[in-house]
Image (cartoon, rainbow, N blue to C red; front, side, top):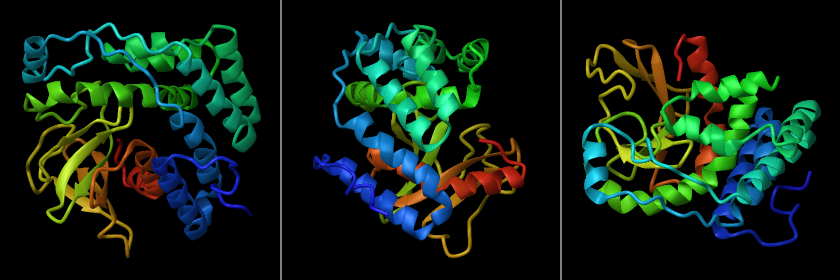
Amino acid sequence: MRNFLSRRSAVPPPEIRAALEELEQLRQNRPVLGEHAAFLGAILPGLFEQAPRETLPTIDPEHSAAKLAGGVPLLRGEQLALEPKGLPRRWLHICAALEKQKSRDMGRKLADGMRKGQVGPQEWLTDLLAGNPQAVHERAEALNLDPALAATVFRLTVLPSLAEINTQLQPLRDAAKWERGYCPTCGSWPLLGEYRGLEQIRFLRCGLCAAEWSFPRLECPYCTTRDHHQLGYFSVEGEESKYRAATCDACRRYVKMVSTLESLDTPRLLVADLATLHLDLAAADRGYGA
């Protein structure tokens, strides 16, 4: 089988190439992830090769500081209009890979919804940024779409644009302290976390906008408990220094943690999420939810 890099005629940007190389290694070392790795390898170039040109909403620095101080994400309540051509292009790109790699029927159904104007990522994003993620599932159900699958396609579709906006918002973030477990940019719960560098400082990472923020090692992001009797972790034998799940018995939730020397760029963040899929399954078996 040819690897992910040899399937493309053009040389991808360095960050895409690095992510595809990690995917290829993951496919070889863990064949059980082959189908998932093939899907992610198929969509990564189309998601990130064309850098989105997004316009940052006008946010007054004093207003932003007040929002962050009050625990309100920067984009909560803001009017955010993403570049209109990029959203349908990326949505259809993901659906094409979905048809080929996973589910022909669901991929085609999601693509048809976009072409017919039934699916509106911009409207879904408005609901999400307003703090109503359940509305995304309700909209999908109303269209007879698989809610979880539609939400995943939506998240991947908007990720490149929101990651660009998050980068533009970084100066406002740097001017304020953030101590919450949810994302300071968009309000989503973390996709995973990083123990970064030699000091293994804990950072949480958002799966919707790729934001990063430091967070205490001995605190639950979800319920904020610091009771060390309630906090723990588990890992697979041999992976203790690379992957682990930080758990909380007070709220029965968990965060996957990966050890890195530096911050993962957005494509490699998606690869890390796949590489730790076994922790999601093990956490579910243990009765933890994300």
